[in-house]
Length: 434
Ligand code: IMP
Image (spheres, rainbow, N blue to C red):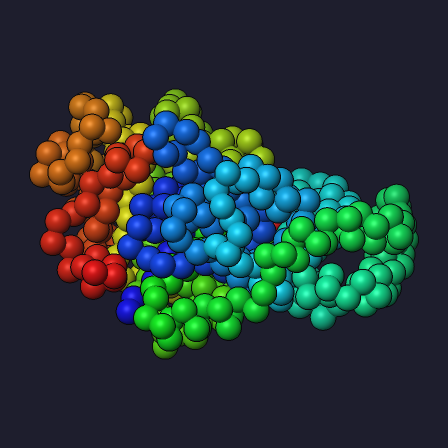
C-alpha cells in the first residue's frame, strides 16, 4: 500500500503534469484535490500534446481510474470541453467526480473581472476563471455544489437567491451588468445529465479503494507559493495547493498518506502579479522563457522567469513535508554560461532566518546568490544520471543540498522518455508501489 501526494514547490507550472503521468503507471487511482480550470497540466505522449485543466492526466492511461476530488471547483462547460477532448479514452467507469465539488457560476467570473478592474495596478492577475469568487462562496457557505444539480428545484432556488444577491453587488458596488437567474438555470440544466453521470461520493470511493489495497496518487494543482495560507498572500490562488490540501480535497486522511513528492523547476517561474525576488528582467530571462516555452497552459500569458530560489523551495519542502524532489526542465539551462542559486535573502542589511510572511518584506529583500558554471552540451538525450555533464550534476547536488532534500528524478524534456531517475534513491523506492 502506498498513497502519495504530489505538490508544486514554487509558483505552479513546475511540470507536474508530466511527472504525474510518469508515476501513474505505478498507481491504481489518480486523484485531483483542489483548484479548477485555472490549472493546466501539459502531457506529451508519443509526440502528441494533451493539456488537461480539470481531469487528472492519469486518464490518458486506459487502465487507471481518476477522481476529481471535493476540493476541486468545476465550471461545467470547461469540464464538458475536456470530456469531449477525451472522448476516445473510455471514461465510463474510470472517471469519478465528487458530488461535493462546488460549481463555478457566471456571477463568479463577472464579479472577478469587476474586482480585478477595481484593483487596477494592484490586481492579482488571476486566470479570470472565477476561481476566487467561487471559493469565497464555498467558505461563505452560500456555494452551489454538484449534488445540488441532482435536485432541479433546489438548484433553481439556490441560483435565484445567489443571483439576486450578486446582482446587487455587480450593479451597486461595481456598476457592472447584472445576470439573469433563469438563463443560468437553463444553461446548467442543459448539461447536468451528462456531468452527473460521472458524479459520486469520491471520498467513499477512494477510501474503499485504499481498503482493497489499491494505491492512490493525489495530484496538487498550482504550487506552494500560490497556496492561500502558505503562499505569497494576497498574490495567491484561493485554495490549499500544499500537501494538506491533498487530504482535505479528497477525503483521504493524513494517516493514509505514505509520502509527499515535491516538483520544482531547475529555475523559477511565476505568472500573474506579486513579488518574485530572483526574477530576471534581462537576456537570460528571455532566453529561459523562450527555450522553456514559458507561456501559461491555461491563459497563454508569458511566465516571468528567474533563478532557482532555494529559500522558496526549502520553505515549501518544510510546509509540505516533502520526502523527495523531482527537478524539471534541467535541459532549458543547457548553454547558459553562468547559473545562479539564491541561497537566502537579506533585508535591511540582515539575513532573514525565515521565508517572509508579508509581501512588503518579500518585495524589499535582496537575494543572496551563489554562482555556478553552466554546461554546454545538450542534456535532453541523457537517460543516466552519471552521463549528465559534470557541472549539471554539481548544480543538482547543490540544489538538493541547499533545500535539504533528496532529488530522485530529473526531467530533461517534455516527453515521458526524457527522464533521468537517480538510481537507488531510497525515498523513491519507499514511495512508489512495488
Ligand atoms: P486564480 O487561481 O485564477 O485566482 O489566480 C491567482 C493567481 O494564481 C494568479 O497569479 C494566477 O496566475 C496564479 N495561477 C493560478 N493557477 C495557476 C497555475 O496553474 N499555474 C500558475 N499560476 C497559476
